[in-house]
Amino acid sequence: MHRVPSDSVPEQLAWAFIEAAGIALRSCPPARRVYERKKARRMPVVAMKALAHKLVRAAYYMLRDGKPFEATKCFG
Image (tube, rainbow, N blue to C red; front, side, top):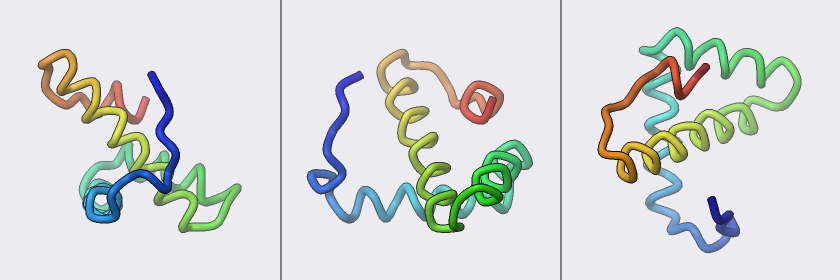
């Protein structure tokens, strides 16, 4: 997958995925585990961005493959 520089991502889209990560954090135990593991090694902001990035990748593959969201695949 081609990496896009973070400064070229529209602010509203980045904001939407950060918000989605916050909701996933509260409602999805596997997402919470990913966040807690990352937060133990980095700052909470970095952990939230990492969680949002996982959701971005999941959205990409859902659109590309036409398959529904699977938390086990996304949060491993």
